[in-house]
Length: 107
Image (cartoon, rainbow, N blue to C red):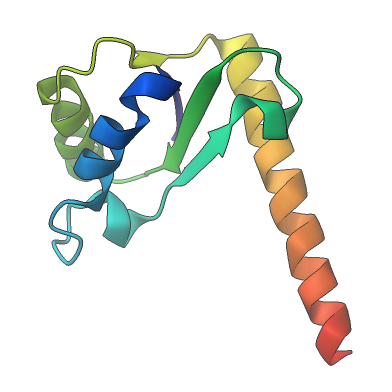
């Protein structure tokens, strides 16, 4: 299951503390993997940063979502499904381009 949250630029530091906490725990964002992207890098005209992560384990999902809600970051909100699909496609496209570019280096 894919999740996309937006956060105001002023709250990015607070969000990073949550994302980087206890990075070796099995239920941490660091061990799961996540992506933080500025809206401008996704061709979105908002002054926001977007958090993307994907999780299939129900118990892990509940734990991660609880960490986000417990953080009490006022501007942190889940994005609408239309914007969510656009962001996920942009992130995956840029990751694919980066992977193919890296692959061409080693030919």
